[in-house]
Image 1 (cartoon, rainbow, N blue to C red):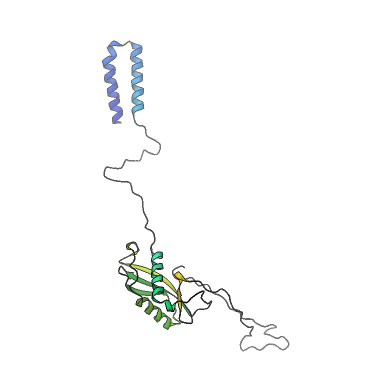
Image 2: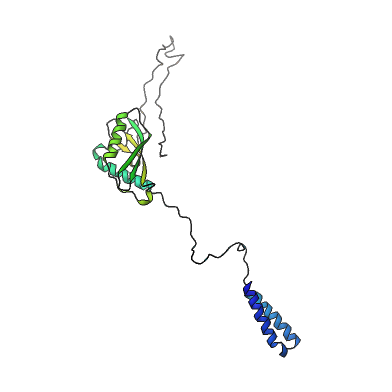
Amino acid sequence: MAQWAVMCRLVRNFIRSVAPSLDRLSFALMCASGLLLAACASPRATPGSAGLKPPTRGTTATHAFVAPDNLPSYRLDTARHLYGQNRERIYAGVMPHYLRAVGVLEMDVDAQGQVESLRWLRAPTHAPDVMAEIERLVRQAAPYPAPASSALQGGSARVIETWLWDQSGRFQLRTLSEGQGESVTPMPTTQLAGQAPRPGTGGVDGGTIAWQPVRVHVVAADGR
């Protein structure tokens, strides 16, 4: 609006200075040309720009930035460190279908790689000796690689790992696991305890009851 007022004032002053030497037709044409020139020079609002204001001096436009999740990479670092500290305890190859214990352990590692605390998210309470051994191995392997500053929350990095423990006392970590066998050995046909087959039927209530093993898929507490 300020530019429009200035332009109109300049045009008006110019017309007044030359008006005495012009006839009526030339005067009218000059007035029309001056108004058209002023209209073209004035800024026009574009659609959608009415509510926008230019950034003030000294500020820059910024965009929200979400830092990448470095915990998966740090979990890989801690898993490799544990493997390096316990080479003779690592189960080589694909693990059996049935394991002695499966546990999910959460640990907090400080900026120097020392273990601050341990928490069981899924404790193999049926095997307390395995629980104690896992905790001993975790603490004994410290110090771990120092976590990146972006992985620290409240001064420590939280790592969740799933432990797969074999009957032999060897183990694998879910992060570096080679998997488990899928084959299931069929179990022999049996009968319900305490019930005798009816004469001439060869089984209970006219048939033999077969027991089959069932594979149960358990989701780890860390969602993996």
